[in-house]
Amino acid sequence: MKTHIVLATRNRHKLQELRDMLQGIPVEILSCDGFAGCPDVIEDGATFAENALKKARALARHTGHLTIADDSGLEVDALGGLPGIYSARYAGEPANDSRNNEKLLAELALVPTEKRGAQFTCVIAIVDGRGREKVVEGVCRGVIIHELKGRQGFAYDPLFADTASGLTFAEMDAAHKNSISHRSRAMCELKKILPEFIA
Image 1: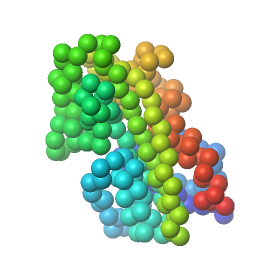
Image 2: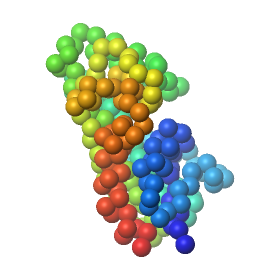
Image 3: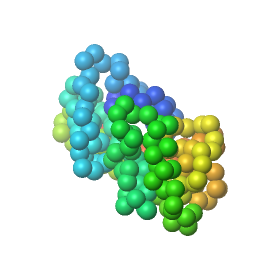
């Protein structure tokens, strides 16, 4: 019998990426949308880890299933790590990718290319019904380019260029992005500890 894992996200892009990365593992992936009355968790933690744990704990309690939750964002060197945990709503409410990208470009308008270093960070928390929990992290370094490029991906993907290939995440196909992204690196760490949770 397969272990059920609930993914604590309603973001369809994240959900698909996480499902793709968990292929081949003997688990059944469930969306939190499949459970009535799932709480909307307020992400008011001071770090990615605090937010990920808060979501995973709440959904594990509600569903009774092993739950994984991630919190991720873009950290720009020239902005002291911003937008960081505020990445999704950097330009204010309601969350809007286009406005977030416009604000980021405006903030970096006078910053030269060599000082536009940045990283995507992803923290994944896993929590089960017996109180066991762990947190893993993945980081992908790159640079913020001067204009949007590419039509794939979401959020800041059209502005974040991988240093190795020079391509933005939005110019990569899903397989390429999923092989190097912050989320894939965090998922690789998660896979190392997953057996102790599904045994």
